[in-house]
Length: 122
Length: 234
Image (cartoon, rainbow over all chains, first blue to last red; front, side, top):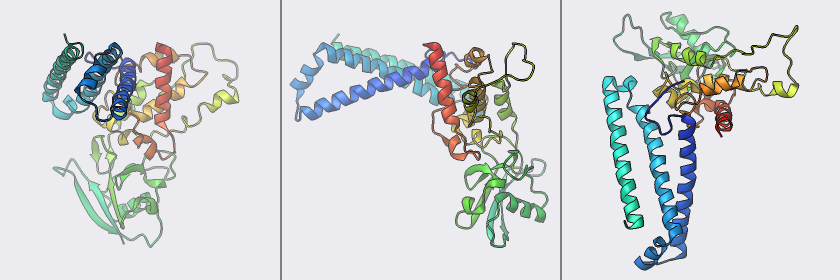
């Protein structure tokens, strides 16, 4: 049993589950957006605003935003713990990894709050 | 004449590893790679590699041949050689002891973690613990592993985290005991595998499946372990 504090659920199963479910939600969101653009060929600002003023689209977008944050966090955490390690870089590995994890977590929270502001016009 | 380039490193005399080029007369025969290594050793007995049974049973002579891991004794030149050239390197990702011999300690440490033995505290019956043919069939494709390490050393996840990711060979054996109806330690076994590294560092790229000299499928076994973990947690 390997313990780790920086994963989402501190369990590999939980992270794996989050990654799979969020991937399905993101795929669905992508298909809906692209499908809408194809159906509404030559759409403009008005149609776009009308779409995003509907509650279902805002909720769906928020769900996609949460999924993106979760998906990105799990993915980046895996990348950081693959390449920025003491095994690869010596003691510097730990410093770089913690730094990279912290910076990406802060960026993710900023994007998340910003996204909510844009979506709900708060 | 076959062009052979072989990885050489003797920590007592060499500052760093180097590739030694040589020509080997195969007599136009489709020899096994191990035969070529034997011919090289007959010429230069300082070349070091592991070998034993020379028929794909012991798993000693796992090496990297033209970029692909495999057992030298059961890999014919016709399969390994490209453009009349054979490049021999030690299995990647493990520390090199000398020439083609790698230190397998990390690999065995991961194998040990899965507790690869039957656990059942109930008193053993007079003859043996019986299984139905269907129950026994579940172990096919799992018990055949010879621990040659070709799979784990072909796995990037194992290269980056050999101390935390169990690797395809260890996980195939983990599932071999999870799937065994005579074993009663399933819950304890699964609890030890649920962390983010032991199993979940597998991203399913199937490099292990690609190189296994016994034709086994560790990725499928890892998928079964994931499903068991999911069933247990939901």
